[in-house]
Amino acid sequence: MIPRIYIPGDSGALALGAEKVAKAIASELAERGIEAKIVRNGSRGAYFLEPMVEVATANGRVSYGPVKPSDVKSLFDSGFLTGGHHKRWLGAPDKIPFLAKQTRLTFARCGVTDPLSLESYKKYGGLNGLTNALGLTPAAIVAEVTESGLRGRGGAGFPTGIKWKTVLDTSGDRKYIVCNADEGDSGTFADRMIMEGDPFVLIEGMTIAGIATGATKGFVYVRSEYPHAVAVMNKAVEIARKAGVLGASVLRSAHAFDMEIRVGAGAYVCGEETALLDSLEGKRGMVRAKPPLPAHKGLFGKPTVINNVISLASVPIIMDKGAAFYKDFGMGRSRGTIPIQIAGNVKYAGLFEAAFGMTLGEIVDEIGGGTATGRPVKAVQVGGPLGAYFPRALFDTPFDYEAFAAKDGLIGHAGIVVFDDTADMLKQARFAMEFCAIESCGKCTPCRIGSTRGVETIDRIAAGIEPEKNLALVTDLCNTMKFGSLCALGGFTPYPVMSSITHFPDDFKPAPVRVAAE
Ligand SMILES: Cc1cc2nc3c(=O)[nH]c(=O)nc-3n(C[C@H](O)[C@H](O)[C@H](O)COP(=O)(O)O)c2cc1C
Ligand code: SF4
Image (cartoon, rainbow, N blue to C red; front, side, top):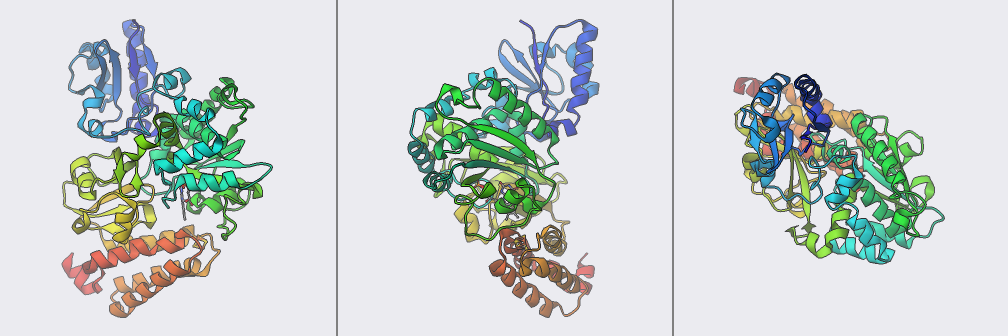
């Protein structure tokens, strides 16, 4: 049997040197006259081990990492093609603690299969969900997704089935499925990993959404910073079309569904669903007032489902294994699994898919291993740039939409960014206001003007100018932004600002005290 070597083509792994490793392995194979097949798989998401190279042996996969080009000769000398021992030897990938502790439903194939092989996709359960969906009525598919408890993974946590039902119940000569792959949140990469590592699962999820709602056309709106994801998605769509998964007759059924990949121009606000629709329509991305909801009047004025990549990519497993299976994972009203993206100053950075319910402390300390600098953790920002900063005192908060909301926080797209005790929370609060000022679409006053006034007021606190009065002013301003903004960009910027002030009051003390403390 020809040896099979898996070297990730995932852009996170590439950034860590996977391409050089692939070239070194290819040239070593040629030099030694060994015939082998190199598969460019996605990443399994343990980025602290990337580039992670795997070989298929008679006893299953054996992994090595992080592999450097300079390791390649000695890997061959150690007989790595048959799983031989080496200083980079990690053993069976699914036994690596970071991976073994996960519950992989949405990411089951990511890093395992060849992303552009439909055969490989089917071998690992791909298309089962779509096949089952084709045997059901649209209403029954919607009921199954509703019953699973799946909530939008883009940020707001809105029940996916209810959104789909609104589109199903709205008549239109044309309906659309729009996939939000703008992934603008800090420290997040789950959407990118799926698009690069298991693109067919997104295609399958979108096709099911189309059949369930009567939409015949889908668009994936990908941020321009993701060129690898765009390339893989485009190739995957072509392959799916040729194989009859997409097209006039989906898997030879009476349903038509096709899709296109579109690239954004780079604005955080274009991740907001209505600004995204404007951008897709070729306009400048401005937030639209609601109503009408996109489900009634969305892309080009037609009924439109807008869902995040992970929401859509979670649908095939629900339609394959059933709502009851999926719903069995999780806690409270947060059902199923969530791909938590651990980033920032953390020892073990990567993607960790788990059922809802783990505490923040377990994720940061046990899974993430604490900070990379070895210093104490000071704060963790959960949910992107609009998420709250949580201190260690809140580490018992379970990963659950309602539990986070009860602590004035949000899960968002499940990105967590870890900071050690050198972080200055006044600077982080200022950054939140500045970010909002830069990214504001400008449509409403609390966000457009408030964010700039926020930066100025925080600067005055930092300079020790009437700190108490200015702190009260920031609090007042945050209330105006929270309740007066048209969308969550202005409306949620108060979360990082107010959580910094509430949980880290010492960082907002007047300048002489701050300087003395430093
Ligand atoms: C400023 C802003 C940026 C957003 N960025 C994203 C994004 O990058 N990706 C995403 O899926 N949702 C983003 N959202 C949420 C979307 O508006 C919308 O709720 C989501 O696409 C719905 O899909 P879901 O129900 O599957 O989560 C953003 C919202 C706001 C207010
Ligand atoms: S809150 Fe900001 S981004 Fe949202 S509509 Fe208002 S100005 Fe635009």
